[in-house]
Length: 362
Image (cartoon, rainbow, N blue to C red):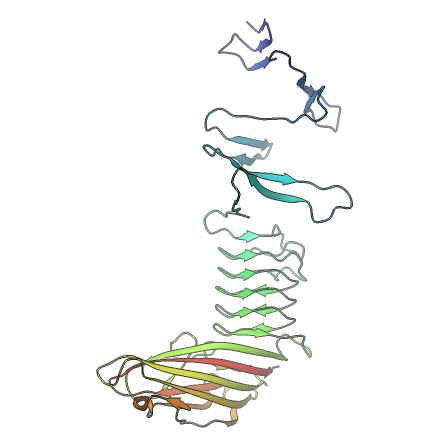
């Protein structure tokens, strides 16, 4: 049996239950589907028609079956099943002269519906452009990166670092782990968890360093301001360096300058006792320190032009914290400013410094 015709129904390709296609017409049907063939260069189509002015078209699966769109290259789109769905995605086109209208929106029965703009698989990134290794699409992004920038001046202006973020703007680059650029233009962020809030032609290359500028003399970061946080834990009266990652000082985790750089630095330092067999938990002290620092052709040529001093008593303190000290000196090993703090024996003290800088860099 190839075809069967009954009242209001046609089965093709076999008897009912073994057929490939069934067409049914409910009583009083006025709307229908037309299958169109096509000439060379055109595609065949399904078209809704009928006496109604506006006629939609529904494709419906059975049970929890999904809808798939497949090309010669394989499956390109899958609409998954969601049980008892009442909220949906609406895809919206736009007519000529209606900019900003093409996209999608959440719609449905609920008064408030959250939406997800993308759900990468595994370590995939969330992107606004397809990478193509050119300025148009950019190079491959880092794992778990978010890159929403839609204009760039070169292929490397992307969130190439793992967990890096670019929120928008033009020509920005975030190239290290957790680095971030909110927006602006031509900002370069290469330090681990470094950041730029925007601006123009800034450069942030230290651990946790934040930088921004409104333009450059000749290269990124040669006229900018910076900000960062340093910390350290002490349990004795030995002078200890504060660093961005609470580790030993290095070329990336301290207040470091590039060659031929000059920085005016202001520091706000707070210390609080967190434990220990002496003193009282909660005792605190605070400092406000300043320094002018310059670096020559290398780290060894770093000079503290002027500063608050090598051993400074707190500006404010509890009585039991009066002996705590902070000091500034040139770090000629790493090429920057050393912020050194001294606590007391048998007192566990947390030290935190906010570093604000005005920078002329090469």
